[in-house]
Image 1: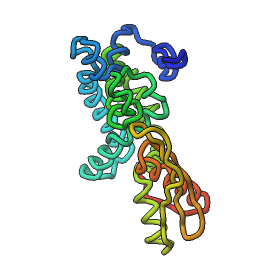
Image 2 (image 1 turned 135 degrees about the vertical axis):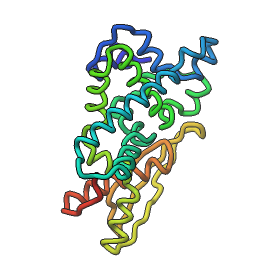
Image 3 (image 1 turned 90 degrees about the vertical axis):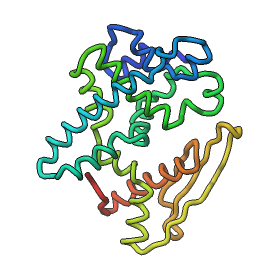
Length: 237
């Protein structure tokens, strides 16, 4: 692990210093690592993930309740689900480069697990659980506010980028939308895809990802940012 991906550097990134380093280490330990190292299975992040999920649901529910006093319960439930779903948490984890800090078994590492949404989103919840156990609800809420509930408009634009772009280009602008695979590189177990998205003859955006779908989503997001600069409006919370 490079020096920039030490536990101390992660504490500096999140703005919280653990009193119990073991909690932070556990929050970053995948089951593949404990299995391979024959460590007590309870030392992986799954129990902390369970706790963090509950803390995240409480904090995000309170946020939506206060921010949208006129919105009915059913719509609040949908909004909360989109905010704390796997893709959205993985998006937030990428901002922290959280995947680089996770301890993985060699098999999981070799198949690109460090960048898999299912793993990084779980680690994000485990980190919330660890902060909550170490310092209580106040620092856990501060972490959630800063890294999950901030910039929601842009994050929502990213979560729904492909459907938003399709709705705008094909539905409102009456143009054809086409994704093109530009490049596919890397070994079979750890490929990188580069994709562009076109509106007619115009290239609106390019994206790169570990899967073709992820690359298309990033390309769509960049296209939406460009179209927003031109004055087009999208779905919001």
